[in-house]
Length: 78
Image (cartoon, rainbow, N blue to C red; front, side, top):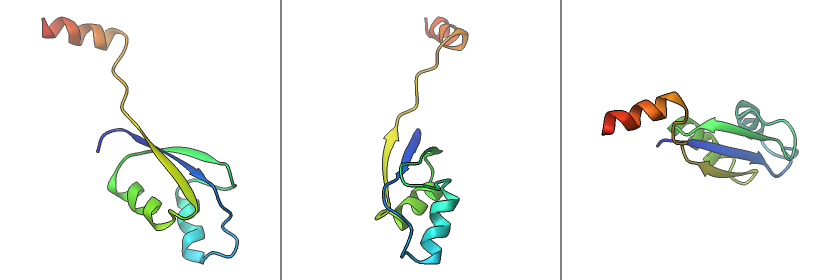
């Protein structure tokens, strides 16, 4: 699962379980509208799935390398 996940807190954690509030805090979200970018791995996806009714998320694909490394990689391909 390459790439990253952009996660935004959409609903308040008031009136939720302590476990859900802890999961939201572990994701790095504090207030409604806060957004974090996380590495796309099974742990992050599991936490998002646990509080999916409070957050929205989207996948951000890996960017192509730029600069010297990209130029060197292109020369190696030739």
